[in-house]
Image 1 (cartoon, protein in one colour):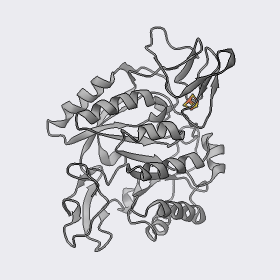
Image 2 (cartoon, helix red, strand yellow):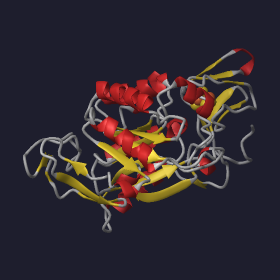
Image 3 (cartoon, rainbow, N blue to C red):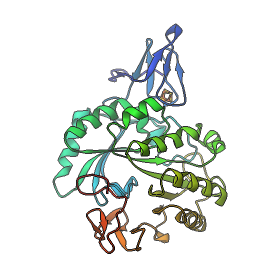
Image 4 (tube, helix red, strand yellow):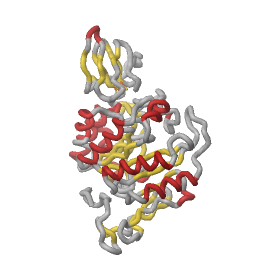
Length: 347
Ligand code: SF4
């Protein structure tokens, strides 16, 4: 797939040259071997005359200042905002993608250099918004890694935070590099069977779990989201396996169950509230913080103290009020909470 005429490209990182001008991309487990003039599965890494290019470097398809709760990140500066940016492209092919216009589309985008992105986040720091940094989100930021790395390095120098909302589908070496500059991640664990990943997403489960484990080990703040789809990944047995694995990584990692609605190529009916309630009950036995998104009826979005049950962070929609926190501790009983506040140190 040739790039549009005049489109700025940058040489990609994480690839090797094979015979006959073939580029072997080493960024994600899709393991694409790309012939000259062709693109990888993510569509935005393109072999131009034997060199792999990151065609969306310096391009932005969507930008907005969002509440951090919207990512969702509930334990990382609750009540703050992040300047959120995205490019077209994704390295999975989820049939139920909730953001397919960006992940699978290729419409108009605009120029945005790393310095401009950081300057925009800086601007939003004032003016009434408590903007703590940048979010790389909406589509799949892993396949935009050169832009993310360069922007995140600049942001760090300005004292801004970097957060990623990602499918976690990346190889170990680029992930280790990213973890040098990313402060928080919400990783989408789409199901807990390899069969689901293969059939619905054109990927595999193991690399995603490895990403969560590695990010947590590296001291990155991690939260996990699972979109529950009726009959596909919401059985009590599968939810139990997911929860047991996550509790083994750390019972302090917040888990967000999210309600599915028909989208893109999947038209199964939306998730019954009972299924979400059941998943929340299973998870709450092993994890300290379990939330349910896209289902305000369940009223499952307050952060409670794991010791005394007091409300630490009250939420309404995407607005959050951390009035129950005294710095990093529960105002009622003094228990420490796994929430980053203030200067960004782990509470
Ligand atoms: S990042 Fe894109 S080109 Fe590289 S292996 Fe993954 S899908 Fe293929």
